[in-house]
Image 1 (spheres, rainbow over the protein chains, first blue to last red):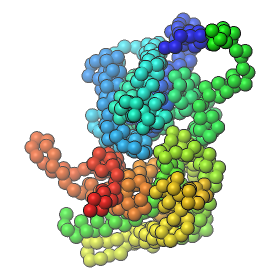
Image 2: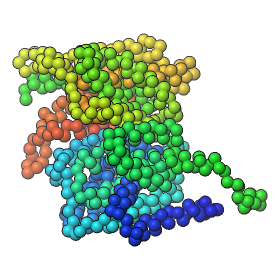
Image 3: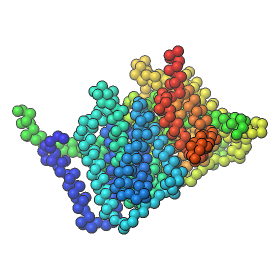
Image 4: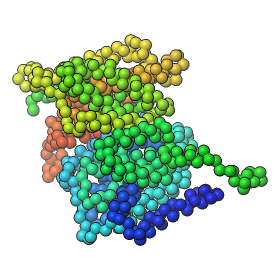
Length: 325
Length: 312
């Protein structure tokens, strides 16, 4: 990690911790159930969005199929809890199954150049949903129910989700600052050049896809445990895949705090839309995608950066002195 | 099942392949020239079906004629979409994140427009003389008239496309851009203009195929999605950029989809038995085919043949 310099650098280092502590201490103020629910949803979706961002943003491999990992995480957690295991073991199991599934998509497609991976991710959501709709073990299309032998605790769900999103931020930060993260960025910019420098694009993509899938699987499990009931048309829906991809795009592709910002905005917008314009979900998301891609491909963070550039700070004197010396 | 019944199914599969080819060919030319995976193709297919539906309901125009009318309308629409949206995308040899997300966003917009106008009920175009009658050959073989007409229209348009592709200046510049974009520009091909016309052509074929599919099936605003994957599978089978490969890919997919539920396969469950694939699993077939093709022959069927010809 680069050493922080100036007030901005220190803020960057301290703000995430402040945010984390604030979120942990929030229940002290006894917020309403709705606020807790919204924060829970934000955290869950952001976890999945951060996962997508590792693959789509950092490595440049767009996937429309993250609903598969979300749904697999949900179902695995539910089945493991049904078998009498702890829900936390269930989340890990969900992550493991999602990672396995990611290899199933990645192994045949990452070897090839061209749009094969994207195409496969569109197909896999459809295929898995059809299979889950017909599978007897999980109740087919009528869905699956999770029952726990203890009272519902909104706080426990909240803390689980907050820890999951903190984990996702931590994983993203570690990867972004590691050699592996550099390799991923090199692949995004120029795969041939990266390969010439000794990066194996195939295995790198496979592993980051697996890590992203694991995070999304955890998110799916946490979501399922609070929801209590879910069905293939919900967790395996193409829509879920869209939502997961929208957050990093809104916030800023390839950054760590972009998906977090995107997640917060997404949940607020989603709540507002479902109240005020229930029939225009797709239109609003579609227009948002088009506008962001054509006008500000770096998302909200890019926009903020551009705004800050309009008001340049005076150059810090110490840096200049350092240059001269 | 008897041999005649298999023949009957085979003929029906071939009839289906005609529409599939018309559906996928628009995507192939757009990918070939611009290297854009056109996800909005699904939206254009859906709009094509509703176009024929509206013409039929309001003006009592025969849906086959409606499908032909869709070609010029969607051609202009596609050029407009290219002019407003697609041309701003950065150029690249491989599909970029921006192009994927942009076309995807546009598909969502189209879908929502359709929901706003026509609602989410399933609609269909029903003409008794077309949908309910069949041509009988012998006792078991019966070919539904709608499938025959749709097949004829699709094949006719594919032939016209082949002629455009090989005989016109526009077709030649398209092929040049597919083969080598830089070389084509050096010899004087206007790539922006060709890209605009190509996108129009791709959209025209999507609208046309969508209208034809609307004759055969019922549709709703989410109509295009299953056909998007099928189009992908077909163009991957065909080698992504080859128009003749598309026809081949369409035949393979149609035959597999038709026969997957009637061919028994052995399975071990308390002793060897033969099972049939439950029809509800049929939508998985295109995806399984895609994965198998990617593993075995990533260049598609056409690539397989090309390699043989080259070594020979």
